[in-house]
Length: 115
Figure 1 (tube, rainbow, N blue to C red):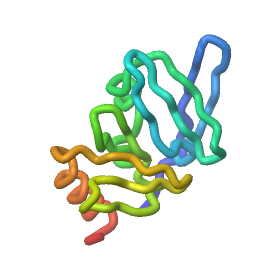
Figure 2: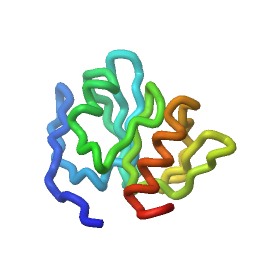
Figure 3: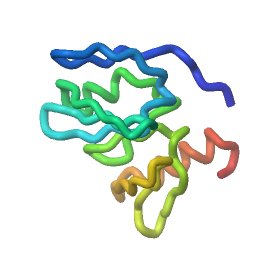
């Protein structure tokens, strides 16, 4: 499976940061803002709700698992379908909405050829 290496521009009022998609672990919505969490354990608050931010990401690399959470599928460590959650590479446990779980598991199975 080949991952695209184009960079994304993320910007705040003070900083413009160019990042490879793989560096993003997940994004969490906070009302009209979104927090982006990186592999290096840094984070960045962006102006824009999670829906706006998610639209900027490649749909083959990122998946919206909950109304307020978008994950980078390449940074998932494990999926617990009983607990409706994912563990990310940084150890963070994030919820999968009950509505999204079946579609999300199917998406992963297709991406990884029968997970």
